[in-house]
Length: 325
Image (cartoon, rainbow, N blue to C red; front, top):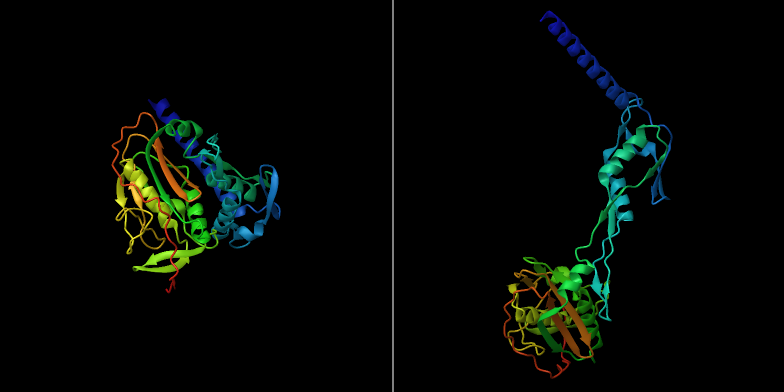
């Protein structure tokens, strides 16, 4: 028993000694480590992207260097923005061919911090290869091939191509909408999908309806896209979550079948309550705006009857008031 006891005491003393060495090592790293050289080079895929001065990221009293966290976070944000490459979904091109998806990349913040601190306070060279995470697209080509087979909803409206600004806006919004995939139990938002309608994004001033009066504003015409989409997904039997009608009758859909949208106002939203993803295909052909809804052969859906629009082209209005804010 005495032998066992004395051995246990020795073992405990050894553990205490080991812990003491570790503590001294950490203290030495924190309080006595000095940056080895003035510069650190950041590389992305073997190419130099930035040189940084160690002293710019150092704070504290001489002999006791600490990392300036504010400067470091600013650096990380800049690197993340400069190296970010979004994943690209598979899509169907204008020839009906499936274009394969592409992976993306985003900064691996945890690995970068480890490498930065090692280089900053160590002597393991003066170059940091920026570590990245691979990101994957939401829609791959295998899924797209599977859900483009069965037409479950379709709607066509007509517009006057002589109004070039309005036709241009319809084309832009249609391109943003095309190839959208809505997954089971996902809620689609027109505003989120199409994005803000601004001059910087190419939208032009065209007639809009404001408080029952025709006015002119950036993005006029896009409500025809949202209204066509509404009737197509209604025909497919999806669950309509949010929809508003214009304050004035529109001519491109039957009365009560429109869906007005505005970036700072109404949105059009629907939910895919089915067991399969659905694919939105949207196009303009001449004076026609067409939305088709597809899914896989396995989908169990309940279609609705929807009244067809007039094929007569809308007449252009000449009495348009400037929009006041």
